[in-house]
Image 1 (cartoon, rainbow, N blue to C red):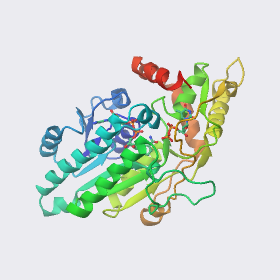
Image 2 (cartoon, helix red, strand yellow):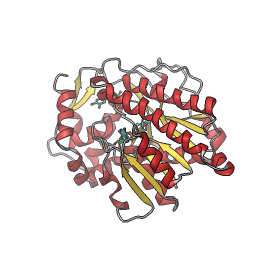
Image 3 (cartoon, rainbow, N blue to C red):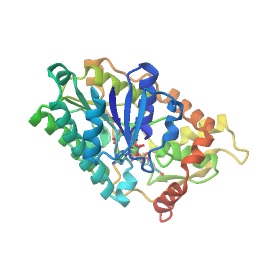
Length: 352
Ligand code: NAD
Ligand code: TYD
């Protein structure tokens, strides 16, 4: 079996669903169920013996040791993290705890377990660390996209904590020989995306007739990838990636935030027209994020050249599927907009 951390979050749950949709290898899923973790994402696996869920924290070494000894996974795919830049600005402590200390604890538990394996299992074992393009910092307009050799220049508490975790993973390979792989991916979007991130926030706010808050001038650029394409990239790297290597994963799709919001509005105008007028009337420019990175862009040629991976979706196909998914899953949206969600919206937007 494989062990997945953070498999109740946005990308982790898509990965677990995708994995079990493609093969019968069981998944041991460890997730602390923070505000971002949601077992409803995995409801279709409720009676599926191939999915073993453990409510637990990756900073809990004793739990990790026990689970590894009991289930003896052949690989660890590490998603668990605090993942939202705006939250990292309001409260960086949780990011240091989970992203840095949690990754350290997981690496140490993995190293201890790996040493107990016989020769063949030891050689086959993999620790895949899921990271972000944000570790590279911000690109000037027209500068070449991030390659794997780009210097690390993280600018937010979130990206600094992810950069730290990437360095730990690298060091555990070089010092201890742990068979690691790292992926650095661009912004994901798709089903089960928690509606405090840009795309799902715009969809749910528009449907509720609420303002669509665009930070600053809305000209910040991100490279957007459909989440199932990220899942296929991770599967590919896990199967065939070179040990100790890092792979940048992206959608070859740079877009300014304002264009993303306008695209979402246009799709909603088509799929769920509002008698009050076009959804773009709700676009509202609000105070910018402190230290806001201006541009991210991924050069994904290494993963294509070495492993033959390319995204299957274009932005046009992926965003249409995504908007349709939110229209079809109003119950999921209502369930995640709990008290904790409303508190966050008040914290982040009230003073903007
Ligand atoms: P998410 O915030 O939606 O989910 C994170 C999951 O981790 C949640 O289920 C949460 O409960 C769990 N978790 C948090 N702290 C934990 C702990 N201490 N122990 C166990 N579980 C814990 O995040 P996501 O968007 O799905 O991102 C997953 C991974 O992918 C992260 O490592 C993130 O840095 C990386 N990544 C995300 C994106 C993106 O666009 N969302 C892009 C590139 C990389
Ligand atoms: P986000 O989804 O938080 O991802 P990240 O900061 O990790 O790239 O934000 C994507 C972009 O959208 C980012 O440039 C910030 C911007 N943004 C807004 O303009 N308004 C919002 O309400 C949010 C949540 C984000």
